[in-house]
Length: 225
Image: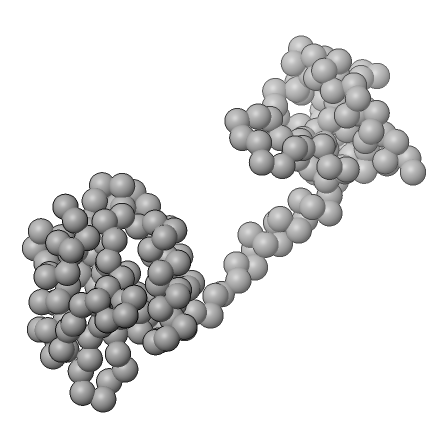
């Protein structure tokens, strides 16, 4: 398939809506006009790419109604939600060219994003609660040191002296969620000991005590400062 193969179906799609369509007007792959309506610009590409987006954005410097047109493909379908979100944010329209014709998935228009307050608040809490900057930005597939893990390490360090009530762990570490954290036992570091509300280190917890010696020392110094 060539980019020019997309022209005929897109032209037919617009002509059915009463537009007069012409190709290669200046740098525009396609321009369409219908009476006194604003002109419509369509940029054609065989795949959804940065080059296509940049072309669309460049055309927005000339006209408001700009569409990107790409053929329906397996790869495009896998990225559909991201593609749609990007076009919506940029105010670009999106046309999908398939075997049965052209389908408009998004019309051009101004975009006023609604901020997601709850996820944003979680990120801010994580930033504020995390001690130091223990991770390397941009890495994947490696264990991250989160504020939750740091709280768990505080509890591990406190229980190094032996089994203790959850309420005392919370008081001694300043980790208000110590009881829930140890009961949930996400890392497998804690075991319930004999006695009501008592917790102790599991074998994994003992390993963590040795493995995270440096991190525990940093947390202790921070909490004591």
